[in-house]
Length: 139
Figure 1 (cartoon, rainbow, N blue to C red):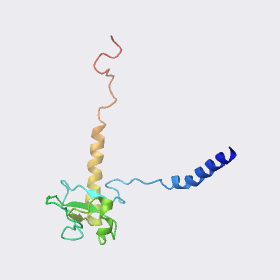
Figure 2: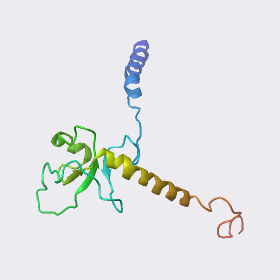
Figure 3: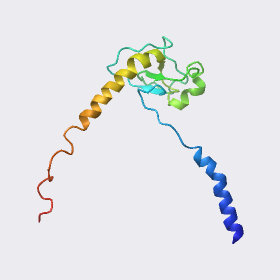
Figure 4: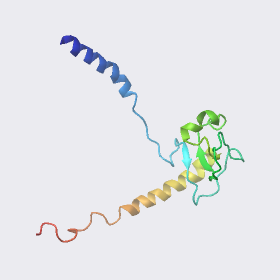
């Protein structure tokens, strides 16, 4: 019995550092440390690193896809074949946006647009004395 308890405690102690190492940091679009897909939408035409899109493994069948825009850390664009899987973009045409365009054009506008959307989502909530459809507490 003591061996069982001791082995259980040792197993838990050995797993504790691994559990602590799983702590991560979440970075959202519009923040300086964000890397990933960017939805250009109505934003100004981005400044890109390479003038032609990069494709590592073309799709096995003829499907025309729109190119995607990515912001990646330095070095990922140069060695794209090694990193494209991380972004689920190996078979797609990819344009890499320049950091200066992301930081000076995209991120500030994205933050402004989403700050405004967030404020609009919370207007008028929780202010009234409403009772729903009028049947609350009545038979």
